[in-house]
Length: 459
Image 1: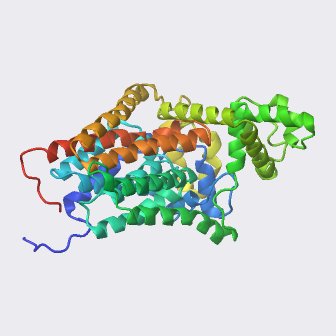
Image 2 (image 1 turned 180 degrees about the horizontal axis):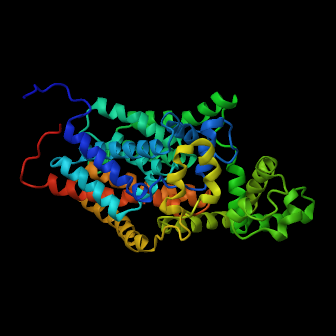
């Protein structure tokens, strides 16, 4: 039976729906193999917030609100599948925006490539906001450089990008940095036809909505509008790790400073995680709330007193963060940690959770996975610069825009998470997959754009 062609705004044709489901399943492959979505230490806090709506000082509430999706279904699988489908749809729009021909084949191929050679599926499969870090960046790139997408389709992408931005403060910071960079590119693009020229309206709208959603939700729940209440304490913990806190306390405590940490400066631990979560004086000093003001005073004082040392530490941590891209950090057995939450909040999930591969005594071994994926990611990051040179020479402003966006996002994420928080593999692993994706798409574009065959018009 033949159906006349009509408006096809969202391309809900059967084979496209199937391809999106296939890519979403590829993104969820680790969870499907595990028998349950992967659980991280932070998962418990976010799940609890979705039930109690009580803020936890070291978390923002937006991802907790997102996990409410599991409530009507009575399972965290609903959260995992929602994450996978959002990611699959954003990638679908990216391929349709930048690839001229064989889009369905390229889309599925991209899903296979990132599933096999990057840690993205392990990120998507976690009940954690991390997967949105990369897809928020990809969405911003589509909004800025996706000229092949119709205006309604780009507009429809705005709330998904805003959602990805608002779920973690590091996403807000990276996205804001990208908007500043895109604004600069837009202004300077008039000087050369080789420079990428991003469209700014939709990216700015997405970042504005995502940024405003964080204090907006906090105000709706608590009556107070704030981004985070833990930033100063987290920065203090990093200064403890870098030795800057002790150096500053050694300088000011003998001169009559009244910091409570003066009495504990000789026993400060070596790492930020040990300071916050281990056997340290942090709890004795009053914890997150009591240390908020003192943490801010110590951090600002150390910056003013030792600016060169702080700058060197920031540079060192940024470089360290760029190099930390392995999958599976802290994906250890969680039977001891999450069991009470799953029994209380999702009792139907208990059996699947308890007998998941993650809960086995030996845990999940990521050695072989990282032996393959880490070199691929490192090579892809280097290739970004090579392909950028090629795109520049061939005046492919769209490919250049995509590559520049990914390069800036990788560096910006390393600054935000490494220099301003604490370097960890999971922070960079959550978006380093963009390097391989961007290189693949740019290579396909360069091949298709400069072939003798005439590209088919965008659909």
